[in-house]
Length: 265
Image 1 (cartoon, rainbow, N blue to C red):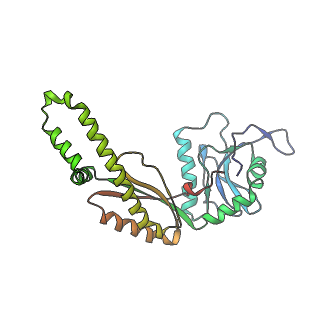
Image 2 (tube, rainbow, N blue to C red):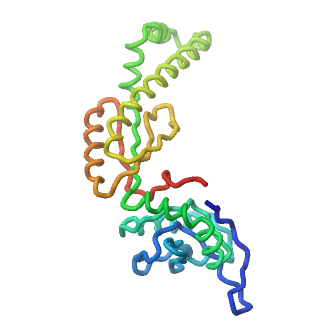
């Protein structure tokens, strides 16, 4: 798909005045009903720019300042969440997409990508994104790691007996212990994370697994779920959380606009 770019001014047809540059929140079906009174950046009204089967959700782009304020990010999120809550199918764009005016939105975005946009909108229709995060209960898992590996257990016990005034002499042994624990956690994380994903995958149509951001993160994954199966998926997450509560904290986030299921190009 053509990626929207930051615009310059484009004259309105039939006048010498420039058309208002358009900020693009995402793409939906032509004729979609927008929530009443929906506003976006700087509380400007949200509208549709339509071409054939698809329509871009837009508002006038502020012309007197650069984008990037927290209020801008929140406005972007608010528009997409309002559409999601209203049950409107939405192919969400990442923050910052803009084009020179309504004509540019129609020609450069919608007409240039008509078939692909229609296909993706069809694929996302009736679906939401649900994100699942699992985090180790650190003390519990650390005890598991030590109990499962005699080398780690022996080194950990020996270091606990080192007097404080001799701690510097044991520096390299502490580094080695940290490396062994990290290696064991990595293998354990891969196994536990796969177990969680396999338990939830049958309730979803697709999933995207994200790399862990922290050592204690077991899994961070986005699931594409039919709206009608949202409750089923939520129950599956609750059951999983209860089954692993002693060692893994499982959280469900969403429903969200399906950011992770939009093709990059």
